[in-house]
Length: 68
Image (cartoon, rainbow, N blue to C red; front, side, top):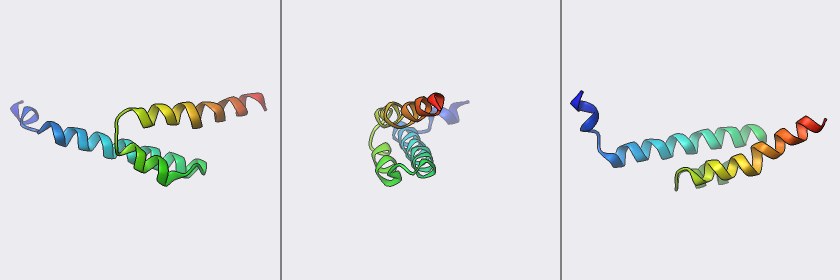
């Protein structure tokens, strides 16, 4: 049980940043929405890019689909 406590905090933060960057990059590439911008921005901070991506890309696209 002590192995998890031995993992440095910076390592956990780095994993979270890389995971967020990868997920946003892949989703933006699938949607055709400036994948490199979203991916690079997502590896700089947590969770701001994910929230902005949700508000700027995902929700408007869902609204457009609903109207059709």
